[in-house]
Image (cartoon, helix red, strand yellow):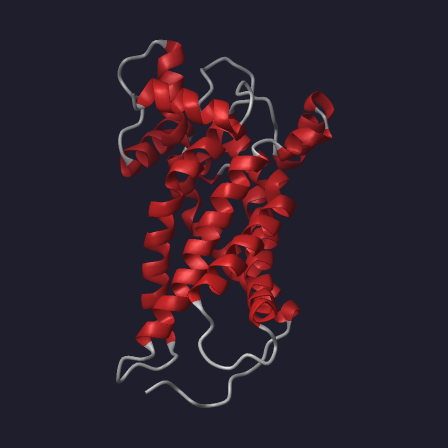
Length: 266
């Protein structure tokens, strides 16, 4: 039987701050895996251009080990500052806006379980809104993560996060901070919908199972299911997003998608 005790109502500010803190905490510990993911996403294209037949990075843990061995352990945390900035904005907004928007879509007088399609729509919209605001931080994070794969002797483009923001604006223009916005909106809207809507739905289903209550175990189970579902759904768009942000030679999102499909799938 679900827990029928009255629920505490949190303000948007409370939810934003708690979400941002939790997202930053997670970012710090998962950034090495994210750095390895970006290197793997960019690897095949780099190998094709350089004419190198053997991939430099093999698997997630192998990539982490290679980066640590060749560039130092601290290289796994490249992009930490913009990564934390991104999580403050994106993590806080996407979760902070989700509840109010979900309530707005069904109406303030609605009683009962909110339909799944309303949850998906609310998550799609909040994910898109949040990443429009946070796109510059995402761009700088990816650029800094890519720096380490430059050949030896090639000077680094950026000395740090703030230098990257200034250099991009000075050399490429202010609009360049929103490079890759199209696939980023698609990726984050889809992932946010998959995460939040599936989390909401899984949690709702678990609470209907006798013996389960709205506690940490229920949240963990719902979170595991939502995270797995989101990664499976969002991975293809994530590859396109990373490649557009890491390399400005692509004309647009469709161009990046077609070239990746032709050179590495077909």
